Amino acid sequence: MNRTGLMVILSSPSGAGKSTLARRLMDWDPSLRFSVSATTRAPRPGEIDGVHYYFTSAEDFRRMVQQDQMLEHAEVFGNLYGSPRAPVEAAMRDGRDTLFDVDWQGGQQIRASALGGHVVSIFVLPPSLPELERRLRARGQDSETVIAGRMLKSRSEISHWAEYDYVLVNDDLDETEARLRAILTSERLRRERQGGLGAFVKQLMTEDA
Image: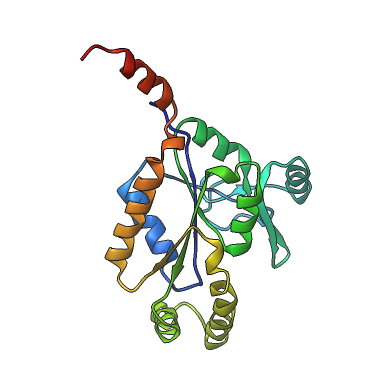
């Protein structure tokens, strides 16, 4: 029995553990593919086209948007970013799931797309805002101004929690990962997602005991 691949959306405010959970999920199941975004910004040293990003011109990017070849897109600091549709559709046909690390706005666009019926969306919450701030500081990557901006933005992001199919409080990384695995396993086994199941049951009913 074949299965159509899923689009798994993982969202959270910065510092809640989304990127770490995404890496762990892909280590657990190497068949998962990570959605590679297209961007109009220039490659940075060490970045490989098709691996880190699909680097494209603004003209080609806008053409893809007009032709409905982007599942979601946004402009960030003057550069365009988006999720190309074709690689995701190819993975779905092969029965492979695609993991999206996007914010609530990207999630909305993907759910509203023609492929929205194949989406499983998960929002990751921190156990508390003070803990979220502690994690941001522990990373040692951002200035006080950037941390303050991320904390301010986190309230807006958290306000969209009810738009998601599942909401997990990441108070323990191992337990949250286990819950993520359980969600993905359950969603893969849903009756409507098991291609060929009807034909299998029909054949089963004709067999002698």
